[in-house]
Length: 157
Length: 108
Image (cartoon, rainbow over all chains, first blue to last red; front, side, top):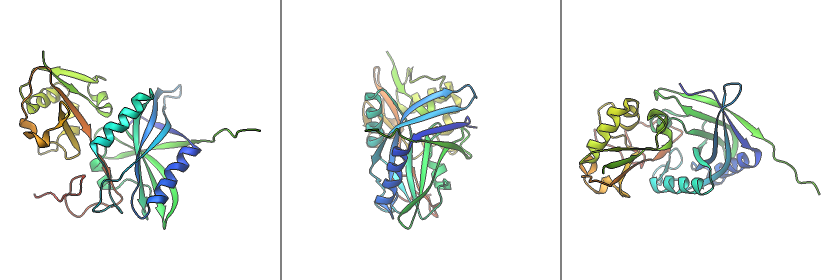
């Protein structure tokens, strides 16, 4: 089973993911999550921090309304961008147009352990709930990880 | 000299945290056999229950996709680097046909 984890993300980045889902509606959007896997905290919970998102092209031209695919070359590029910035590729995001933010059986069959998978549900073009999931090591099911939205500092005059 | 197999981040916890492992191997199949013999937990992530490479696993030898070479029979020589690169795929609906991450319906 995956460790109990919390995914920390700024409100700005969470909004970028939601907007991406709205922009590509009724098609699925997809992208990479770059950040840090901070390891176990004092409360024995693993905290991951998303520090940037990299929007990517959904390569599933045949069925983009209910499928997404990120090409290996885009995976290599996302990893290269993360390494160049001294951070890690920690997961992926995609949208579920007119479906809940829960992984499907197809998601499970194609997921990797360790990565965080954010899903944003987009209903009639409007982004709704967002959830993050991690595939358990035995590949049988996902564990949901808590998303902690950090409000960004407001610039003062 | 040997063949270096690069392990992607999500699979490193199943390989003692290693980013790369070296083997004496004359083909990709031999290298992957040795990799999964040494780290048995990797097998279910790389191969289906029927023993074929999962469709969302991409294997490159010196930057070349083995699908365009000789698949798992692609020969390897000392100094070669084998990279395991994930395809990332998913979608909102459970399929009614068997398809790979690129949308091709697979023949059973």
